[in-house]
Length: 189
Image (cartoon, rainbow, N blue to C red):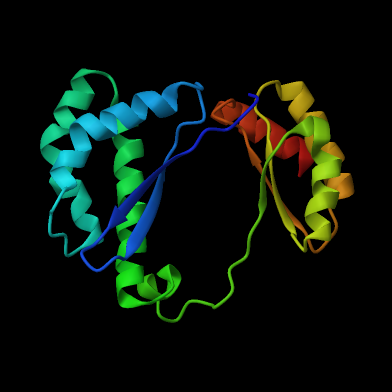
């Protein structure tokens, strides 16, 4: 993948607040234009000039068209678009209330949020870890799940290069079956 497309939905209210949500579309490369067309042709008109008083209501607004996506075997696209709309609505409601989103959801949440470096490939992992460390990042997520024996060797390599105060995660991209996960877990435990 030479680039990572993004499809951002921007919702606004009548006083200029804006909420953003992302429709997942990084693969295949043409999925952004395909999903945009679906959003524009099917979803957008149902939102124009709609009074929404609860971010969770997005599910009810579109429940009546879900069957079309099930029949077309496109439920993933439906869910991606609904998810983006849900995020945008929550963001919009937080803007309207002049609150950070985390405080809208939980007024007792911390003021600072922890971040992690994501999308790290095994081939350039140590370089990426060091770049993250320079930025104060202490958590890393690596992409694996394409070859179990390579994954196991990579996990062992990462175990040796992560310090005691750092945290790491692996995104196996649905590449492991449950037995694979158990076997690899036991091997690196």
